[in-house]
Length: 219
Image 1 (cartoon, rainbow, N blue to C red):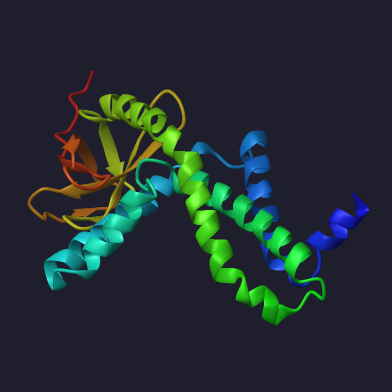
Image 2: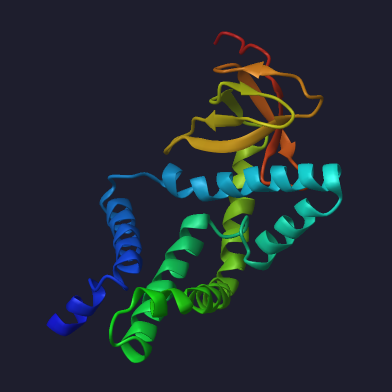
């Protein structure tokens, strides 16, 4: 066990070990309740913003955005939260780094370690895809259930503004607030804290169309 720990903190392995430590710290904080599910859901928000950039690239150049979108689809990003993907990737990358340096880099050379970096990343990405592939139906089901609660709900704009290309809405419910990406259908600009009604899911990205909500009638 002591030898394993010493290998983990060798300079050639230390960057991967630090990444692995950060992932473990994140999940410990998640389990203990120090961080909430809204931080976990940032994965989906991040995916949606990349999709927006990809769509813009397609419209502007006809090529660049399509490649980005294809890569995201290949690795199921947008279906599986980024933190799930990142956690498995870092786990496999850390293991691949330890194995390659143990067997092929006994002198702990930075040059040799750098030589194996690209193969380690590619192997880790492939293993990550294989592992998360069976999870996608579960997360699709979870997203459909969440969607049924979101459409028709009232929320407040949580970003500085919300328009046809950018914005998020926070929805209060019985549990923790739900934060979703949102867009206006006609490009209308809405201000922070403005009340909106969730209309429907955007057809191509993980975002919801919203419209200004009518004032609630007093009870």
